[in-house]
Image (tube, rainbow over all chains, first blue to last red; front, side, top):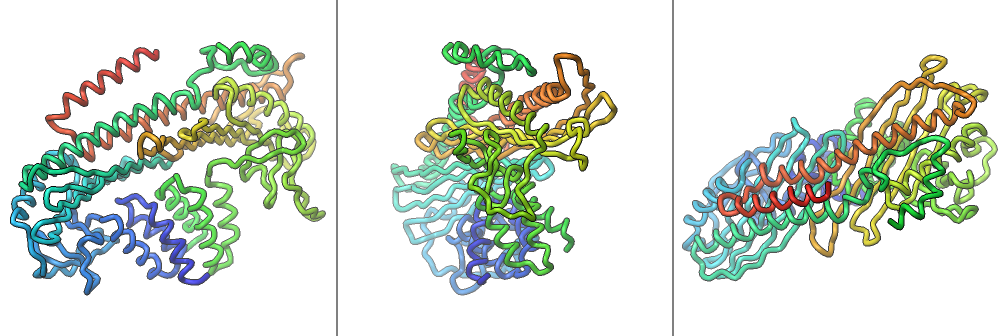
Length: 263
Length: 294
């Protein structure tokens, strides 16, 4: 098989990995594929596409990739770093002077987001703010829980762009539950809000309101899927409300089935 | 790396990747294995994976009976699948005298016909008259005589989709029956349900995946004038499948609707002060809905 074809197949597999289980996916793939290069290339693509947390607080994504090296840029601390998938940590941290103008509200926004994360993201919270010019920023917020002892991992990820007085972006939810099975929740919703101004409190309020509304919408959608689609997909009991009388007489149900179905 | 390690890490990989793409992922992994077969065990590994990983069931058309039937690794021969209605393979396999396609022994085929009939009624009662079911049995004893006394194995399959495609259900019950004493048999059953829920018109929320549970029991068998050994097996098997599917359905309810929602609200994003009232109201209305449906 050509390495291009192999690369495409591995890209496809990696693209559906749960955000918090890249290390395990890497290990499993390496038992099937001898070329570590192919696997790492797919993981790198995944990291840039999705945004992944390293060392608990740094985010690597296409939005903060350094174009001139393998590194990613943390605009808050003004540092560059490499990422290590096996240890899920950053390495080779070095100071960096970004050649981009920061909006005047940047520092206040960072502080307020830190507080917002503590208030609303109960587990691991990581965020970053990427200055685009004096008037706009890219915000990435990630709330993550890796509870492998209880066979689940989950991630809430919001990516927003603030351009002048416009907040736009999307919220993705991805939860994986795998005790004697493999169950996945996926949710993706666009956000588009016209702000009344460009103050930090205006931005945070818009984010908070959107995310609260999305959380409540997901709870509603759960109920809808449960009541409307799951409940009668396979009934808990037959309409007769008793378990089946197996054996030679089971054909009797068929004799009465027209009556049963028309009730 | 040993064969077992390769096998286990592939299963672990499939348990992590998105279950919604399980069929594609499994195919792609098999392609990778076949093309990176350094020690010559690739084909065996592929066959073992295909028979151990559950994927949504394919539907075949039985030309003889005009009825649909379900396809899995247990009624497969090459690219052909055996219909439980006509006992024929579709499409007709290339004739190969050295390796004819497998069929159950006559006595087991007789029971297979009855089992298909019974589980068709079961499907009708639990799946509101829709869906497809198929049962396949195979001999496990070396001896061709007295097959039922020596035990046998099989699979019960049920598939249902809602009309608008928002709900998809596949049940796969694999069982083995072995004699313990002259009057009692052990029944081992593995039940997997693949459940996929999403209404794209309303929301991007997608819940999909599968859960698997095993159940094992020993049943004594009393044969009298009206109840044969075959009927005894069918009664015990039906009761066990019904019980196991009931359990897994409850488990799906717990995991899909309670566990996942809890992870969202308790681990990932809390609505906080402002929303707690709203959330409490929602919970209340859920409780009331729950009571109304009792």
